[in-house]
Length: 113
Length: 109
Image (cartoon, rainbow over the protein chains, first blue to last red):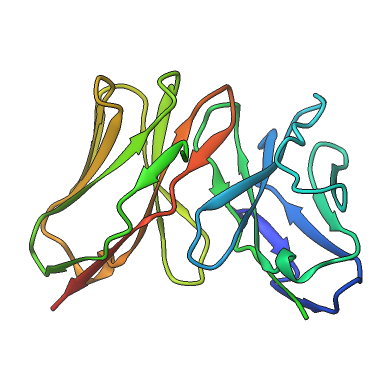
């Protein structure tokens, strides 16, 4: 079956611009996660959605970052007024239930010039 | 201190050899663990889940030592295709995973 999909695969933007990253989880997966990974680093948790519960936003690095998940499926991560330190690969993952293994999408490689 | 730490390696091994490496975790409440493999410029792929003392899947064996708070991954009969970065993750609450920075393994012909 189809895995997690993300778009765009690559995004180059200028400092100060807003960007929107999209994630389409595996059908039927109720849990959705956003991470970012900088070069040579581990995965940094950003935000978690589970069903209709309030999201866990504890990993968002600043108020320039926000995310939403519409209809319990597709999610959008928005970064406002991008900075160079926002350059990273943004990975989305989904799982069938809390605590289960997470399956990752191919990521969006964001470059802020 | 990071919640999950890994030896970055690299572990360079010949084809057919056995390679093993550990992942230590600081949160004693961690309930389950996962090993992922990540190829260069690709997303992590789930390799193995560990919910009790260990798990085995073909040439891959994971062992959990709760007393010493580490989890190991052993790869037997290494293949060239096993060359990758292996990420360890621990689940500390109902859903959040903490990832290590990864261990690089290179299998040479």
